[in-house]
Length: 126
Image 1 (cartoon, helix red, strand yellow):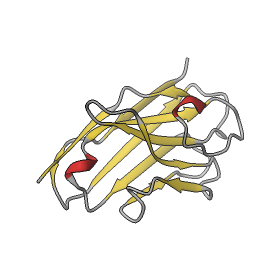
Image 2 (cartoon, helix red, strand yellow):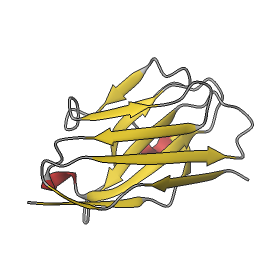
Image 3 (cartoon, one colour):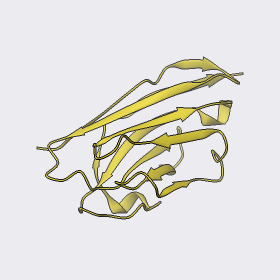
């Protein structure tokens, strides 16, 4: 059984930083692409950042590029999201997601990810 668990969300002032962590267990392979998504109240879930299993292919949404950094230890189903210069509009529930196929590519679409965590709340106050 695959489990995806996020941690690290909390309330922070604008301009502050947070580090989210995600660990996926029960996967038969360590070659699945992983990603972070977020969902604000009343809005659709949106892509934030994704990383390949090798860690060398990374994609960011335009809204977080230059402020957020995704990383992944070599050959592990663990991923981190370092968030700097946080803004009130970054407030959302952040979800970690894993693609279902080995050697999968990074993808920005919600529908292409098979396994999801329960989410962790990030609140940025002005």
